[in-house]
Image (cartoon, rainbow, N blue to C red; front, side, top):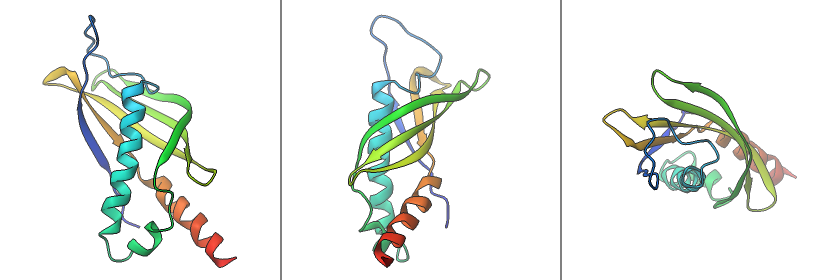
Length: 132
């Protein structure tokens, strides 16, 4: 399966305090954006001929992001790597990975990228459920 990497550019401003460090993995703005990126991934996959039929059976949204943990922080490029458990519709849970990186031209802005590796496992779960 081709890997899809979605990223979003978001304005991030700290009230009263500016920081050049990437926001924390559990930052509410970040987790909200990760949920939005999941929906965008599904929308993009609906347009691909080979994945459209599988996407129709996938949960339509991430309900919550739990067990959030930082994996690494690269000071040189101001990028934080994160892992978490996403709770989806239908009582499904899946492990996800995402990164947050500060924009080097404006430290009040950052990029969030949601890795797509988890989608393959999610599609396989759905295929197995359909085969029952």
